[in-house]
Image (cartoon, rainbow, N blue to C red; front, side, top):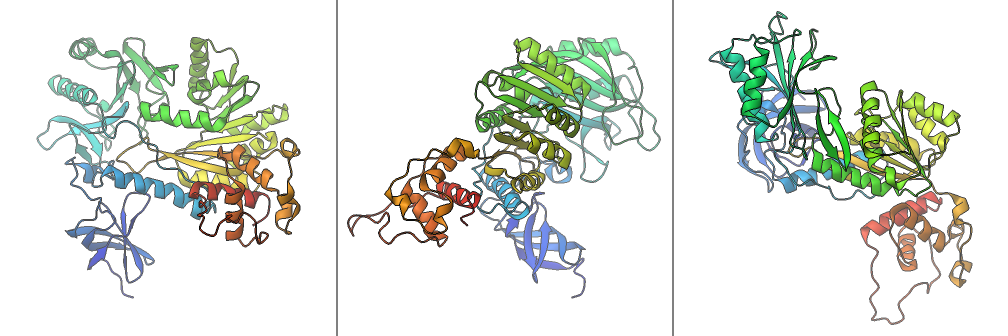
Length: 545
């Protein structure tokens, strides 16, 4: 087939890819088209033909799909951050649920694993507590701020990003006005000259306190006293102003050195009742109310008991672990960033938590060391970066043999991969909860519960006559064992009838009259999908299917 580049084609968009592009088909070849929605009837121009697939751009939208709406941001397409501005939120939520389910089905091989409906936060706009604006000059030579266009360093001015609280956009505008009025030079990436590179802002969601940071190619700011006086007078919520020193020729936004011009160099806030101090270099979830719902799910999945030890790997400032400290007997947190470990210790002290300790180490090395020390945590919480866990970390967790593993991931693909690794070694994913921390963007968080059945806890089983008439497959587990497994791993209660229905679906033959209705006119309830999935997982665990 000749190359398709620069050809026009009419397509129907069938689905969405995980980067937010619509996917249609041309002569059997997948064509990825940004800013389209399932059901769209479009004419596209093919801009790149990769052989097995191609990329296109919309030339004309003939008929919009059911979830397609007019974007409410004038720069969302060139900016690229809000790749779902052209979808209503219901369609976006369905797409994100699909991304997670597809990753666990296709990459993890978990076809029957329950993926719960997307858990959303209270806001789809104005939810971010952090923003990093690059600065530059507009076409008239005025200082402005915005975002870089996708895969470039071409500045797209954006005076009111809808993901940021209005106050942060207003503060950025005031900073640019000051830089303009005082002729403070902006950084030029090509010449490595100039001073101001980025405007960095943080806002405490509960406290309302604001941190203003300028990332600079130097160690001082001209007229800094006047700058602090004017900005804090105009915006009294600004509690600290900081310079972050970055003199490197790099795409990394912040450097390692911070110089406080005003205030303590940090702001204070709370997350799930945990007090936190936030500086420019602190890792912190950008959507506080949605993150609190995320951590509540992790706490529920952990199912901690008062005598349990909780191991929190990749713990950051300790927020997840400390939010569960009251539920367990001991908490051990591990984080590789020294500043984060010190913050975790300070947070624990501020809360009066006496049962926690925090280690500064690589997660894999620390987990292996703790396993060698015969630490036996009953629950392990994993919150790895986008690349997921390495084999050393997972092997160390397996060596500790916890009762449950709770994985919090910002990348469903690596989460599915890591869950497959654990599942092949005795841990079954029980359920998956997608959580939308980043509405209108392509990102979605995932919380996974993995559980290992302890056979010693399931020896005493009450038998009845039904269990005495067994096929070869049934002899691997009784109805009561299946019920116990499902209850422990999912919290669901299932009946003998539902188990029988699922068994029959997989060809496990029951006695002819088992669980038949007493009357021919009686209607039997059908096993709900979530219980069918849970029973299926139990049958797989016991080797019955």
